[in-house]
Length: 411
Image (cartoon, rainbow, N blue to C red):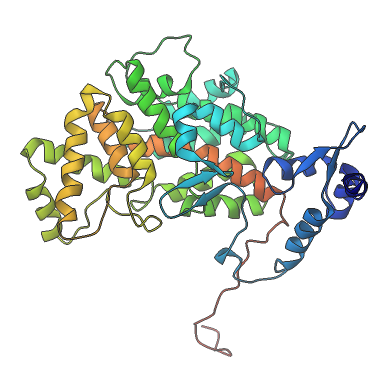
């Protein structure tokens, strides 16, 4: 009897939409992001909702500042939780997800809340052709992020629906944009023309070396592990762009711009060069000493969010240890970490593991940046979808003016 009374107090989808001031389809976007829970009512075809959960969501919207304020200090998100030594996508251990599912499956699940085993992303033919021509026109000095950014801009010009920010349209854009970024890159290795999986196609853009199943699994694991990591610098840039209702291609371009810095996406390239030097000199000790003597930090070690080892590094090293070709690179990485640990409480982070993969596969030093960017695009899209449902232009902190006080004479 109590259950029946409780059920009677639950809200319908239309009632929830009216209370939140959104469209009915947006209510289900809140459900997929874990911000609302729903269940089927007895004898009812539609979903019902807990009014207390709905009211809490209404109150959350009212608490947000309407004008300039330091809104960047805390941004509510239901995508990634980082704890002491683990991180979770929508409450699910991200490492366990990467061990059991491929990149495309996890990305699509992160966007929709529904796991589709074996899902594959395909680039629209016309869009891909335009993106390839644009990337091919770049000079040889262009870096990996330059190519990806140009591919994203070129893809945008082919999409007349890019300004439609409804969830279904954004999802369609995402499923076409990520493979476009990969397939627009110049091919340096072999890949079957009919290969539908993303990881083998990306592998053929990064190295001439033939890949076996374990190598592809290592790359796919790296992509899955790097999908999102809360509000990193590039993700914050994405949220700002999405807050202004920039379309998904522009949102991804904003993320790529922030990612290109040496303290973010390019960090694995520094670790790659260090591991190469360790393997050439036969020992980590002189390489570590040279870095410290020059006043440089040791790349690939330490992470401000993890007091111990980065769980992404642990998971990727675990796969690389099954790869005979990665034996020397993994040993070099372990030696760097062990040498530094004698005097500093620093542990391997994902950049060091990513460098071990790129060195083992004979990829260029910049390959890690490409892997990082492609992987993180899925997370950027997830954050954009989340931000599109918030009040527009809320990412508008007020500046603290420190210049000369007026009035001043006109120069």
